[in-house]
Length: 290
Length: 286
Image (cartoon, rainbow over all chains, first blue to last red; front, side, top):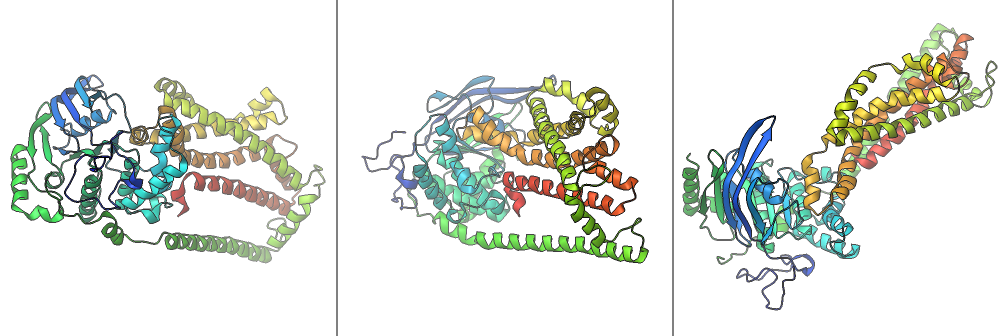
């Protein structure tokens, strides 16, 4: 918070060559925080259940820069979701440290938005009320004093950003799969997170909707420039989306390699056919020892 | 940051691919519901026609009075007292309803409270679960003599009987409903900035309400079974008592009128609960 607009580069620092259009500006012209810097240092986690110990993570190090898009890639059970949940504050770590913008993580926070494989919308609330849930919950704790008209205006702008302006009064069951995911996005964006944590968010979608969601996500990220940590087991998805891909695996599980993806931005579905894209995929496959 | 080629805007191509008209969708849902209600009503009318035809063939109003005769009896005794018990059908209905509503309110509140306590703590669950599992399969009617010995023959034993029948149903429904709320839904609320208390009140409880209200519908059906049986066995008022009196005097059309009274009252109470279900679970509106 508190980023100044006086230098004319917007609240996210100097961004891109393209000026953001009115629809691409932060909804309502609100000031959004720049992407958070995440530092994960020697994190280990062991689950104990019925006397059995399972090492989920061992000595994980990773630094994610402000506004960077990093994918955690690996097979099931490699600890990528565990790591994401530790950063989200939903799981305690056994050893090591996780700091976001220099502050150690303790418990969930609206600064760190979390998106799941299922959109997790509240089925008894309309899209608009789902989106307003976060700000209202925070207001009840005295975290801000924005009044209803101001929140409604921001919700309206965000609905437009995600292309759901006509569906504010629809209930989640009345939306299509892709629309539900966009609504979940909108809800997370309302709390102005500086970090978005995404746990295989498009894993349950059909292939075509998924391609659309990739484009949607890249657009949103292009506009807001929050930091994103994105968990996936899909190599192509990770190359299309990420600045860097952290490959996870091994016994005990850890990050085995971090690869740069040297593709230009913005990217879209057509990039998957390029030589550079295929080279990146090959490098990841060999890092996964496939 | 690499130079940018302008990305296609988010809104238009996404929405164009998934355009549908919400108002038209809802109108279609309403039409299909009207159709469903129409077909259902036709089914009921068909049964009444078969009944009327059967009574015309049998020509014995003690075995099977006609629909019209039953309707006349129903309307007459709604206001006029039945000779052997000096109360009208309307008064008896009010008495039965009062017993049901008191028992239902207390039983539901107790059941939800116990269920919530069981869902919240493993100790309470392990402590209470066997008790509920032992009580649940018992027919409440077996306890009528016991409750008469304990609580006399007034209103209290009937209300206790209803509570006794409802509590296990509501406990099981509440525990299941609360258990089924995904942990991630609560986590989601917390990452959106909700305190634990806010997440409980605004997410966990609303998410469990459809299951709890569905449990209330089962409990209400059980309450009618209990009260009518109790009134037939041990009461001097209520629709159940009137039915047994009418049966004793071979006034079959009044027996039918009593049964239909229970059916209508039961339908209306269930309709109220279904209405409540639609409020707490919008996805059932379609």
